[in-house]
Length: 561
Image 1 (cartoon, rainbow, N blue to C red):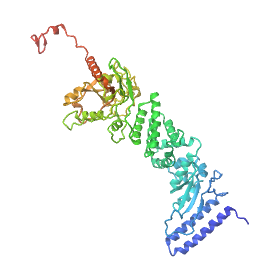
Image 2 (image 1 turned 30 degrees about the vertical axis):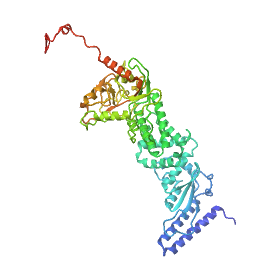
Image 3 (image 1 turned 120 degrees about the vertical axis):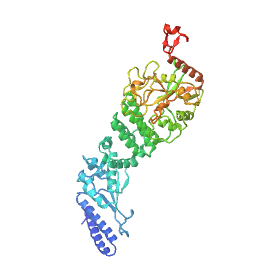
Image 4 (image 1 turned 120 degrees about the horizontal axis):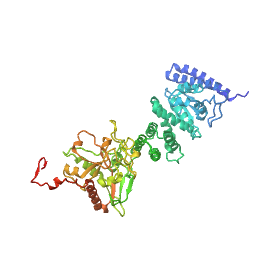
């Protein structure tokens, strides 16, 4: 009589169970630990036999997945069982029973409605599907005494599962990645978005799934072509978020945290966000979403590592106000810019505008501000080539030119500022926000943040050193207003004096924007500044006939007789 494979397994399993039980009884009087271990293995054998008896067909082969009915996935197969027990209950990996589970055989069960959603939220597989319950129970009773390995369908390999949660994590991730299209990847991003925004209690489990997905598969794909898995996920995350900042920021903040130790992936995320930022700007994106993109880009800049200081510059040709060429930064210096210039470690608020220190530890009102300003300017290198360019802060003439305010009160025209134009004190909740946020407030040349944000310090006189507060106060002005300025008091043609009265406990709101000019234009630059200052003063008011004929002899304290 020829025995089928199924019958052989029944016989072997039954004999093993009886033999191990008998051996356990014999050893019981000698070693409780050994008896307990043998009884456990006997229970495992009985469990495997019970699992096999629920199927009408052979188990999955240990070389490749076989065709299996959707309602009855292939059970695990015991590949090796030790002949002798170890001397203690601690079972070594090389002597443990080994079970191999083909992941692809269970994918149809995971694709049933509610199953993957539950696994992503940490629910027990047995409670999600009756078809998964026997396997889930087997894992719960067998791990870690049995070595359970999963043969993945995506980029086939064998993965050791050390816990029940890890087992289902591997199967879930494998089913997502082995999907031939984009559907399951989009599903994962949608569910991630939902959990991050509305189901925060499931974030720890979500993090476990993404960390496995990243560490096992995605970290190695960051440098692949645009159709790589990581690039696809990032692109889809951008597409799903669109211009909704309440969706975009949480998911990318989450992804940055997952990839925090992988510079290649962080660069990929940064490049994708930069492209999305440019698209939104072309369409007039809202300040809310642009603000959050800038915050994310600032964090990514710190995480990726230091880079040379290469600000976006806008060129200005000679005109009647500034009869020489110069270049201006598109936005004020940020915290990240200054950290790069001064070679300091990056900070998380890298996207915010830098504010100058105003400490008065030396007894002066502006000594600290001048020292930091001089330190920043002194740390910038000059350009090489035929024309040597120097960095500086703008003169008042250069500032009205770059702001587009020579002939109009605001960079965008004559309309009064709104919350779409500038970061001003429209309400009591005003606060410092990232640069390049207010697209509607750009100047005709594309310069950002000339109104609101931080006051920009500009030159009123061509001095290079200051012995007293009075000299410093006279040589500089503040332009553009800040987030603490009421909107009705700010225009691009009005410059404030620096005053020690602004100090006290009030946080500094003075920033700076850099310009570059040719050394050969130094004298022309100061002459243009003097000319512009005189034009701002205007002609003296006309005197009345009585005032024209008044002399010191007939003037009185109260007026003219």
